Image (tube, rainbow, N blue to C red; front, side, top):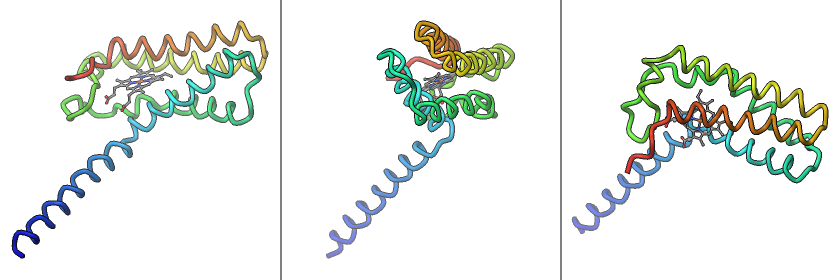
Length: 149
Ligand code: HEC
């Protein structure tokens, strides 16, 4: 009987630990923002590559990317590079000017894509979306640490 109570408590506390872990992870604004960027951009690039016109839903997602691009710096307010599981480089806070410059480049690249989409010129759109991708990559190369383990 005592053993069964013990097991019950172990299982109960484990599920709390696991749920808190996934809770904090999935609700972390930075994680959510970055994942949204990736999901939306993937979808938009698929449509552009297939030479189809962007649907109103695609345009909404592009707008969402733009909104995120304007406030990326707020996702990195405090140096939390020692946080477990984070791949944010301490360089973000040591070299804030360079980081800020890359957030501005990124925002501009998205702004440009929004403009180009209006032209409906597929080649222009491909080139604009490649610049957006290059901006993501440029920041990741400088400020996102390689995968631990
Ligand atoms: C100005 C810098 C910067 C820009 C621009 C940027 N990122 Fe990131 N991104 C980061 C940093 C730093 C991390 C690591 C954050 C961490 O681990 O806490 C990251 C993490 C991510 C992750 C992993 C998120 C997670 O928690 O699992 C994805 C996915 C991602 N970025 C996609 C993108 C995409 C797609 C773009 C462009 C459309 C983009 N990022 C633009 C800096 C940037």
